[in-house]
Image (cartoon, rainbow over all chains, first blue to last red; front, side):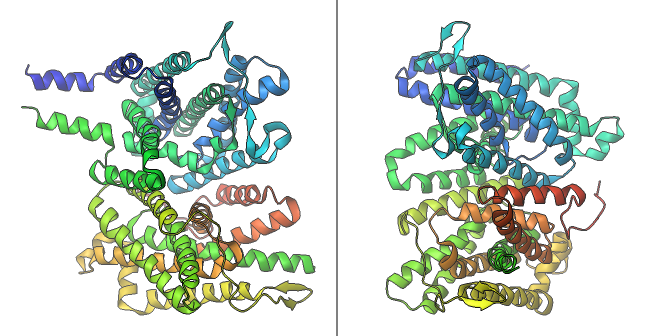
Length: 320
Length: 290
């Protein structure tokens, strides 16, 4: 029982990512207490939560979605429209948005999940584009391209405001999301998803209802996206159709791939990469976008498995 | 009737541009299984470089030629510096690299060019040609003619030259191609170069109609990808038909349904087609290998 075996066991243990994540969440406010840093960190947690949906859908089940931001938009606008136009409670709207996204995902997923690979990618892309168009064009309800203001979220009488409070709310949401994702991975459904990821025919041959499992992953992904969208809208106090845009969908896919496809902790790292990096690069002014693109290329060329799995494999290999 | 014809003309013009972009996607996909999301940025380079070279005093043909050469250089560099070093990586990783490349190219274009919209004067004037009650802009003929010319040239290249046949062989089976002595790396580089050239030419002829800006590539990549998928990924005929169809769907959607929801009309039709033909219009009915 050497150090390597112990470390290997720790690295492979199911809840290690969760413990590391929780430790990080406690550390960030100690190391970077300014409200700007806390706001960026809260954004990382929100985007990680949205991207966790793709971890389940793409990482576990191997189904590509280029329209994930559509569900983020649905969740975000539920929290924006519900209180402003219907006078509903924001928290209730957050839940309703998640339910709505799940129902839409169920309806849309049934026909389109029969498609494979890039054909599924274009179908989901089409869905995302249509959602963004509706949010963009129905200005009377959504405020159009300028977006709309979002009223404050209150949790059982406590009005959430201030960077630190939002930091803890989003931390809690991400922890729950990560716990669920890790549990899904270890559940019979998770094993079924990985089986159909490798071969749908073989999975069907062992008695897995491939269609139902894919649909379940798609609905779960939508719910993750919608909850994250709702939190994003409520925290920023403003939402625009940009939240549902094609580039935003691509950004979410980039997070899961850069961090490490299928890795829960990798998803958080990928989200941090794409949220924090542009903030740091603003100092470079006009070179910001070029450097961001360059860094994405460099990371993918040298760490093709994604940051977290590549580093983990490296550590496991090099230990004495 | 004349309104119908007018919509057909503008639909075919936009569609021809999408068709060229879809052809670029198809070439690279066939040679490497990679969806090159930087494809739309070649269109932008073609248009922007021509605009800036012309404002520097060059004549249109020379400016266009240099712009195409520049785009080809970018395509070859993309292959040599970003795709080749990641050889053996999964398709998702390679696609991510092309997305990174697309962001990088847009970032550089902001610096090398600027952030404004630019246009080119129409090549043969703006006097509309009356056809059957509708009118046709001379620039539309340029777009349609260039598309036709490129499709024919590409067909002749693929079917009647050794390099073209090597590209087809690589697309059919990379390992078998390597076994018969085809330099697959070189073929892949050629696919990137060709795609860049086609994209840049599309950008040159399209700019008087569509305008251009450093970030216009995203929209073109989206439409070109949709066209390639509608036609059936990997099928050049499908790419052209898919492109023209999406152009027509968009303009008819704008003309008869709603101009705000023209993209929604196009995508709903794509979903409808894929529902019945899950591998696109020309994707074949091949059985999945297990």
